[in-house]
Amino acid sequence: MARRTQELGRFTDVALLVLISLAEGQKHGYRMISDIEEFSGTSLEPGTLYGALMRLEERGWIEAVEPAERRKPYRITDGGRDALREQLATLRRVEQAGVRRVAWGTA
Image 1 (cartoon, rainbow, N blue to C red):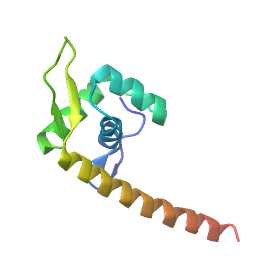
Image 2: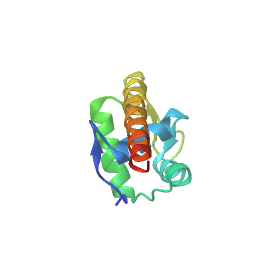
Image 3: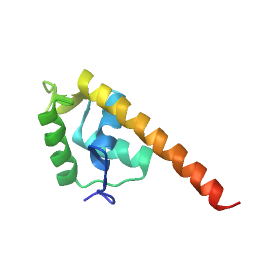
Image 4: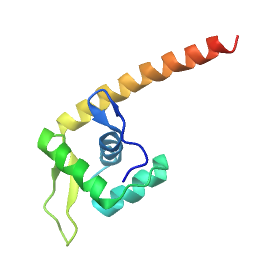
């Protein structure tokens, strides 16, 4: 299970992490788990990852790629990339508001 499972907007933390990972290029599940831990410090269990992959695929934000070997790779779709851009813009606004408010509280 992921360390955090809160939602911000229409994304779960795990969905956001998966889309960020796939924005770099197609990956299979184990590679996503490693990549996500590397860039975010979040350890995902396989069941958590595959549940998120299923939901993202249902939304049309990722798609499975024909595997060249045993592992099934996924890639982000144009719709997934657009959704990721929107969510990252929202997170930037939230971060900016938080930084301003924390700074005001220390005056």
